Length: 163
Image 1: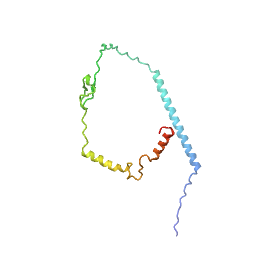
Image 2: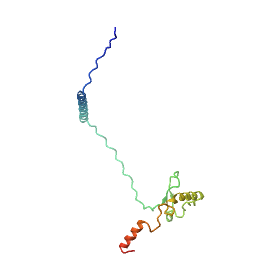
Image 3: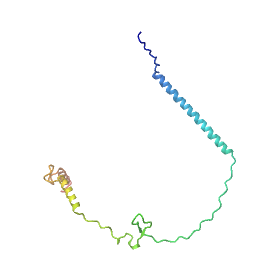
C-alpha cells in the first residue's frame, strides 16, 4: 500500500480589489465610531452646562476693605557708582568714590611678558609659514612690480592721467 498524502485546500487569497474595499470599509466604520463618540461627548458637555446654569448661584462675599498704603515723599538720591563684587561669594557691591568711578587708581592686572617658551613657539610658527612668503626660493615668486595686478593698476592710473 502506497502512502497517500492529504493536501489541505488553501483558502483563496483575496484579490487586490477585495482587500482595498475591505480597507475602505474599515476606515468608514472607524470614522463613524469616532463621530458617534464625539457627539456623545458633545451631549455630555451640553448637559453639564445646563446643570450649572440651573443650579442656584451662591453670592460670593466681598473682600474686606484694606486701608491705602502710607505714601512717603520721594527724596532725591545722589547717583551711586559701584563696581562688581570681587567674588561670587560677596552679596553687596563694593562702593567706589565718585571721583574714581572707573577705578583708574586701582590698577589693572599686570600682564606678564612672554617667556622663552612662547618665543620659541612663535619662532617655530614663523619657520613653518616662511615658505609661503613671496621670496626668491618660492616657485611662484614674482618680484614686486612684475605682477599682472600691478601692471593693470599702473595702466589704469595712466589712463586717468594720474601716473
